[in-house]
Image 1: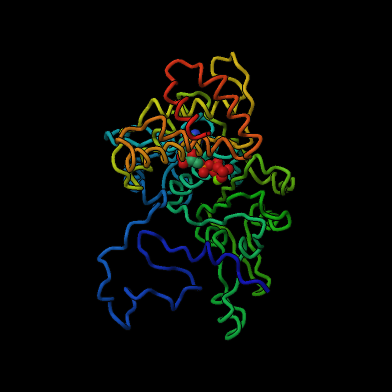
Image 2: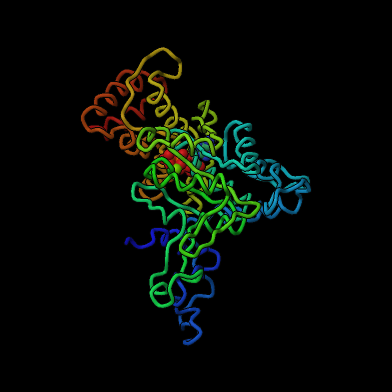
Length: 406
Ligand SMILES: Nc1ncnc2c1ncn2[C@@H]1O[C@H](COP(=O)(O)OP(=O)(O)OP(=O)(O)O)[C@@H](O)[C@H]1O
Ligand SMILES: [Mg+2]
């Protein structure tokens, strides 16, 4: 029998406290907290800051301000009202002047539909092409609704039923037989019993028969435990957000029975260059801060250039609608534009003159565009010669691209 697959999700310690939870981790507390030995000599006063804090920790101040000023009705066990959750995602200014930064840049209606779905008995499926912020939105929704975005199952071809239902602590099971103590709940099971938001990432990568485990959970709101002759019933506040990639469609399609349990919200690509530049600038600034990159003024011009190149190649036509271009095999998503610019800023900071230049982003763009060394290289060359070379003010960029493409 395979070991319980949810260990990885279950043993994720909360970054804020650094302590572990869950029965599987009982005796393995770290030296700093081991009562037998006392605090370790060199134990730091505080746990080091996580490289990437969870949304509820990174935006704790905003969430607290929203909760304090939110006087609208809240569904059972919700930390905020649906209105405040939408404001958290879309940004705004509170009556006392607190500024809530936008997390998601896109149509307001999409966020409203997503939030209200979570307040109903239907689960939420976020669908879209890669890099359209499905994971990002799911994390922030869970953080705002339940104050905890960590009840997460990562879907893969190897995800087992135990990862969605529960597994067993085999030492306990062998010593004492099946009991509640020996049972290791999955993140979904914990969300059910605590009235929280569970997340399933990449639902369509999970084998179809394993996906169907969710049907009873979502329609009956119960999880039978035949080994103990009992069940766990979901309490108010429980719901589930799944994400799935458009491009994976057909890999393990959702059964129609399961699909009926979800409200599907499709996240679109940013509708304009301005919107995409806005998204990339915001995220690059946040990432730069969390990576503690030396200050480099985020070159608006270079960001716009990266976004323009990505959009033109993605759409197969130049922004002015005049020239058709071939489309490379990569997705060239907003997420990749963010990586290219962040990489460029690191280059500028460490090896450049502290200003984001065309030569800092050229290699990153090339890497994102040329996925297939043969076919994509031709596409890139054609674009470079037919579009970039002719464009006013793009000469430096053209030369930088030629240099790295050689
Ligand atoms: N409309 C948007 N608003 C805000 N951020 C966005 C938007 N689109 C993309 N992003 C940013 O893109 C990054 C990647 O998003 P994310 O990983 O959530 O994409 P995804 O849709 O889950 O992709 P994949 O299908 O590859 O899993 C995030 O950092 C997010 O901030
Ligand atoms: Mg994702």
